[in-house]
Image (cartoon, rainbow, N blue to C red):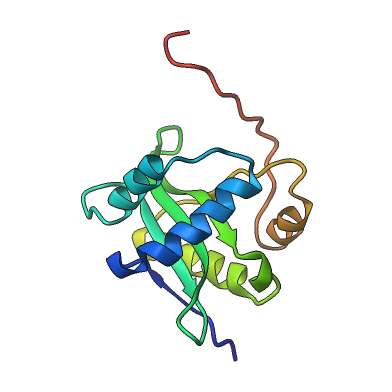
Length: 151
């Protein structure tokens, strides 16, 4: 049985969460300021904000993974889905089952809340993650575009 527990992030998790979130930003080669991280953390800890966070904690109380998620409206189906914005497991903890537990908990939350889907994107070259995602989800044929505001 796994010694990893998945739970909601708590205010006292900040330092460990920050180290994981820095690792996530580094993985995607995104420069993330402390101010930006503080903003995300304030969202996570604001019950009125749409962003939520799960963390995976090992038997020693160390956080080894995170998942940021939020509901999103799906007008075409008149349902609400769950959007998984960020998913990260510390490199030294990959293969521990943490990602399965994080995704499993997210699936359970979606079911509890009556959400119609759990959706996320990943980089095309993120082969290790994609091999896991192919086991637990269905790859769609949708292509993502980003447009700058005020274009």
